[in-house]
Amino acid sequence: MTVRSSQESVRLSDGVAIPLIGFGTWQLDSDDAYNGVRAALEIGYRHIDTATAYGNEDKVGAAVRDSGVGRENVFITTKCPPGNAGREAQTLDASLSALGVDFVDLWLVHWPPNGEARPDTWKAFIAALEQGKTRAIGVSNYSLAQIDELIAATGRAPALNQIPWNPFAFNEREVAELQRRDVVLEGYSPLKRTDLANPVLSEIAAAHNKTAAQVVLRWHVEHGFVVIPRSQRRERIEENFAVFDFELTEEELRRLNTLGG
Ligand SMILES: NC(=O)c1ccc[n+]([C@@H]2O[C@H](COP(=O)([O-])OP(=O)(O)OC[C@H]3O[C@@H](n4cnc5c(N)ncnc54)[C@H](OP(=O)(O)O)[C@@H]3O)[C@@H](O)[C@H]2O)c1
Image (cartoon, rainbow, N blue to C red; front, top):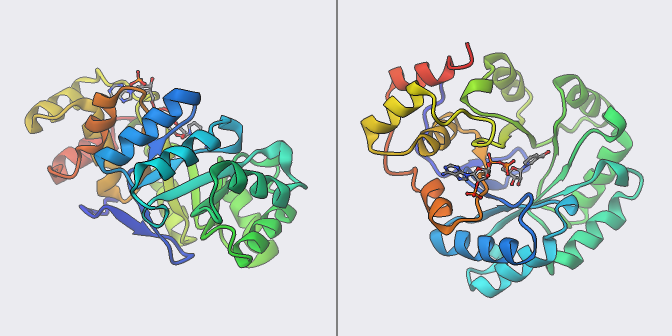
């Protein structure tokens, strides 16, 4: 299944538009987090992905403030660590304080706490949404069964599930099942988990005068998958955003979809 899109954002069930390409900040500490986010915002990214566990929310917040882009123009995601289940409200308040913002755009349960869906945690997320401390709520690393448990307990599906994703991991059933529940798929580790030297990727990249990384990211965009590549090098931060000026053919998309066999 292929949903063609050259759009730059998708709408979440909570009504908020999320830019398809965001800047990932895992393992970017201190100056690297600050400089990376400043570079990303200068280049044109308007979506930053952080987490309590990354320990860099203060640097991310400072970079957004100093960028001059304006808080209202930047989509900020942060995540609640599984170990903080039961202390959700305090965790979000600490994130808001570290980021120096009144609300985040998306708040995720980072992992199922102890491998469990935890509807009580999800209820605390719904309360935070109702209080306006986050504009949308979702999960990360949840299975379809765990998502169904949250829906059964609360009647509210997560707006998004952030999961490891790349062409080799493409799974048509997962895509269809998330779509059926109105859950947007956000992929993480798009480059790290991909063999960028794969000959099919190289061939498609050469045909468009692009890099293999750009083909991988364009593949996400054309499917409407949100994707959050990370780099600490400015030239790569730029490269990873330069994917809105070419289109993959149907045949190329088909070949990429079947890379994983
Ligand atoms: N929810 C979760 O559990 C979870 C888990 C993992 C990640 N995430 C999120 O997803 C983001 C992205 O995932 P990730 O950081 O694991 O991995 P990634 O973005 O797939 O890959 C990052 C690695 O790829 C390199 N790279 C970046 N651009 C490149 C390019 N154009 N060509 C070749 N290599 C390139 C980077 O090196 P240089 O820095 O040297 O360029 C870095 O080593 C994270 O930063 C985080 O925000 C979430």
